[in-house]
Image 1: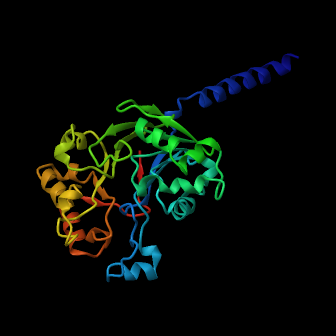
Image 2: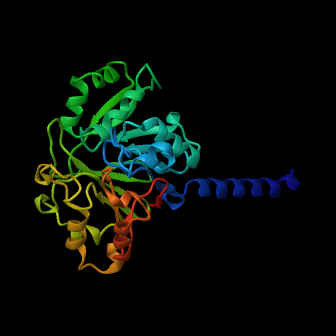
Length: 314
C-alpha cells in the first residue's frame, strides 16, 4: 500500500492541474473571426437587368461578382452568427463552408440591420421548402421583430419554429460568450423597420458593421470619434459619387458617397483611416473593380475596400 501512495499523490496533483487548465477563462484562448461573405448593395453584383460592360463579365464568370453585404462571426472555429441574410444566402454560406467547414447546423444566430431586401430576404431559405431550420435565433429591433412576426412568409418561419425572434434594445450589448454585440440606431429609410449598425467586440479587437445610413451628418454619433475606438469599420459605400445614376435624383437615395466619407475623414491620421473598410457597393460603383482608378485612389488615401473572403480577427 505504501508503494502506491506516491502514485496516488501524483495522480491527484496531475488531475488538479488538468482541472485548473480547463478552468481558465474562455477568453484566454477564444478565437473570434469576422468573415466577409458579401460586399454588394442589396441587389448584388451583377444586378438584375444590367447588361452594361461592367456587368457582362460577371454574368459570364460569377466568381468575379458578389452577393449583398453580409458577414459571418465565427466563434472558436465551431459555431457562427450571421450579420444580415442576403438573397444569395446559399452561395454565401457555401463561401463560409469553403473557409471553415461550417454549415447551417452550426448557426447560432442571425443579426438583422433592417428590412430592405438585401438584408433579410435570404431567410426564405430557412423555411420548409429549403433548409427547414429549427429555432434559429433571429435578433432584430422591435419594429423589425414585429414585421417578421406579422408578415408572410416570415411569419410562417416563426409559426413553424424555423426561427425564434429576439427583440433587441438599442445600445444594450448582448453577450455571445467570447464576443459581444451592440446595436446602434442609424438614420435610414425606415419604411418597415428601424435601421441599426452593430458594434462587434471580440476578446482583443472591436469592429463596426454599418452597411446603410442616410448621411453621416444626420447621425447622433460622431463617426470620427467612433473610428478612434474601433479596429475595423465596415461602412456604407453604396455609391462612389453622385454621378452614378443619371436621370435619378441622388438626394432621394441619400447614402453618403465614398467621396463624401473620404473628405469627412481626410484629417485623420493614416493609421485611423486604414480602419475604414468600404462595403455595400452598388453595381455602378467602380470600387467593385479592383483594377479601377477609383479603387487605386481610395487605397492610396489609406482606406480599404471589402472583398469576399476578407477576414478580421477580433
